[in-house]
Length: 436
Image 1 (cartoon, rainbow, N blue to C red):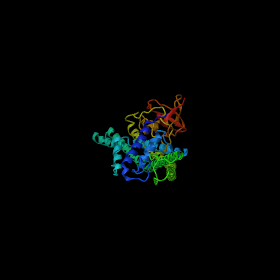
Image 2 (tube, rainbow, N blue to C red; image 1 turned 180 degrees about the horizontal axis):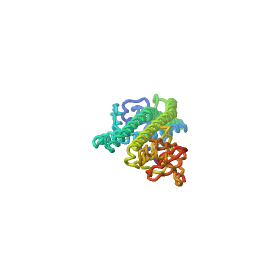
Image 3 (cartoon, rainbow, N blue to C red; image 1 turned 90 degrees about the vertical axis):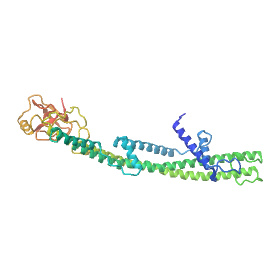
Image 4 (cartoon, one colour; image 1 turned 180 degrees about the vertical axis):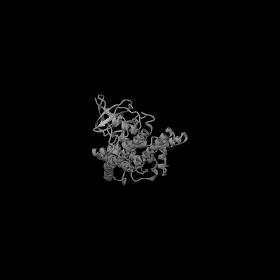
C-alpha cells in the first residue's frame, strides 16, 4: 500500500480544522445536520457532519463520490503547473539576484507595497573601485590607463546587467507571480468549495442509505419507535406509525440528495472551466519564456561586444610593451560565431593574444609586404571565429574559411602570418584550427 505521510498529515489537519469549526459553530443552529441524539436536541454543525464523513471515507467506512478521469487529469495538470512554476520562479530569482539577503529585502519591499531602492550591480561597483584605484595610483601610468579602460568596460557591463534584470523581471517574473497569486488562488478556492460540496453530497447519500435501511427494518418488524441516532425525524408525529415516519424521512433525504447533487454538479463545472484555463496559462508562459530568452541573448551579446572592444583596446595599447599578454588556448572554446548577428553571439570567447607584434604596426606592415613565405613550413588552417583586423598589419578573418599560415623568425608565438589570395597579415593562433 502506498503510504504518504505528508498527505496523511494534511488530511488529518483538514479534519481537525473542520472539527474545530464545527464545535465553534454549534450555537448558530444551522438548518442542516448529520445526526441528532434525539428529536428535540440542537442540530449539529454541517462542518462536523462533513468532518465525520471525511474521516469515514479515509478509513473506508463510507462511500466516496469519485470524479471522472478527465477531471482528475485536469487536477493533476494544474498541480504540476503550479509546482513547476514556483520552482522556475524561485530559481530565476536566484539567477537574477544571487544574494539571498538582497532577495529577502526585495520581497519585504514588495509585500509592503514600497518601491525597491536602486542597487549598484557588482560590475558597476568593480568599475568604481578600479576608477578610484587609477586616480590614486596615477592615471597616466600604464597600469592606471588600463584600470580606467577596464573600469569603463565593467561599467557598461553593469549597465547591461541592470537592463537585463529589469527586462526579465517585467517580462518573465511578473507573469509567473501573477499566475501564482491570482489565478491559482482562485482555482484553489473553487477546489476547496468543490471538496465541501462533495462531502455534503456523500453525507446525503449516507443519510438516504440509512433511512432506507431503517424503513425496510420497520416494515418487517411492524410499528417500531424510529431510531433517531440513525437519521433525523421530520414533522415528528407520535401517533403516526414507524413505517410512515421512515417513509417521510426517506422522501426528505431524497430531496436533500437532489439538491446536494445539483450544487455539486454546478461547482464541478465551475472548477472544470478554471482548470481548462491552464492551457491558456501555458500559452502565456510560453510567450514570456521567449521574451526572457531574447533579453538574455541580448545581454550576453552586449557583454561579448564590450569585452571584445576592451580586448582590442588593451591589445593595441599594451601589446608592444607587454607582448603575449592575452594568451589563449589553441583548443576551440565555442562554436563559430557570426559578428554580423550580435544577438546570436556566444558570451564565451577564447582570449586573443596581443594584437601587436614585435614592431610598430607601420613597420610590421611594410615588412610583411616584403617577406615571402618560407619554402617549407606552411600549413592550412580553418578559421574558428570571425576576427576584425585592428590595423593594417593584421588580416581580417571569416569563420570556416581556409587560409595558409606560417611563422617568421622572431614573431610572437601567439601570432602567425596568414595568406588568403593576394592578402597577407598577422592572425591570432587562438582563432585558428591548424590542419595536418
